[in-house]
Amino acid sequence: MPPELSRSTRLDWEVANTSPGWRKNDIGFWSFAALSDAGALHIALGQLPDGEKPQRKIADYSPRYSKKQIEEYVRGLIEQAESYRDHAENDLNLLVHDLRKLSATIYFQALEAQSFIPKKQVGELRLSQTQARRLGQRIKSIIASQTMLKMRTDYLDFEGDPEMVGDEEEIPVYRRVDKVVQCFSPLARMEKIVIEKRGSSYGTVKGPSAFEIIPYVLIDNAIKYSPKNENILVRFRDIEDTVIFSVESLGPEINESEKLNIFSKGYRGSSALQSNIGGTGLGLFLANKLVQHFSGEIHVTSMARDDGLALNAFAVRIPRYGEMQRPIRQ
Image (spheres, rainbow, N blue to C red):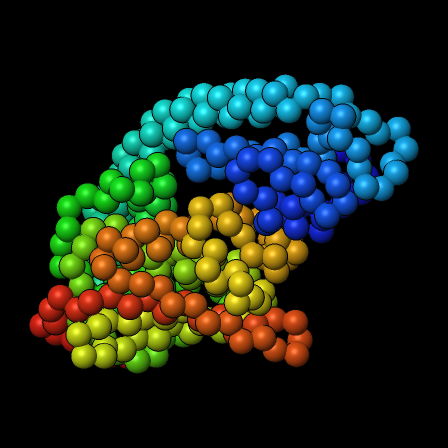
């Protein structure tokens, strides 16, 4: 690849503006791109096939391969990548199966330990009420960690096949989102971030039992990109026949042109790429897929600030199915 095309900003531009097939860029270099069955775009960049010459003179760089050779090379890479993916998916399925067994063991052992805590003593050990309370809190933290592990394995399952969502059930939105908030709270505190809840919601929705993946992705992203000592706000409200919850936080600005692509598989915005924070571009894709199974939508707003950050809000709107018998207020 010539130096003119190897700069990161240039590569980002080329990737963002390349579609399947052959394409010539603004300095006369060709690229060839092909889609895999999984939807990944494989790009051979900086090619000069069939005697083509660049519009700028570049030392020690001349065309070496024909278009046919380049196309065969890219398709060969795709075949290798898909073969590797198939093996990786098999290994991942085995890992998820083992994680589920481990998760269930942790959960039931924690519940059993919790049942052994009387108010004043445990077996031969005499505990004060304060000590017993602290022990109970530690066990609750273990259960919360197990819940996080379960959500992560559900995420992996859904990532493997977004169309396999399992049975539908009636889901109380506030309670499910609140459970995710409680699980993320210890991680947020480590990052010196507070997750605040506002509003109320009585509504239930009807859809896949893996609902928690939606707030899991949104809150995980908020913590990942939020500066330290900043709050993340989770809002709840019901409007007529719609249940709404939103996650608001500071982070990289999401440009208007990017809002159309942000839920595409593998896509990451330019500000997110420049932040040097790792990511796969799968989280929002999967969250949006799951919201669609509820016949809902995710609405994105991003308000830029003078300090280079933006106030980003992801609002999830899902048709109301019913109402909780005992509504929870916050």
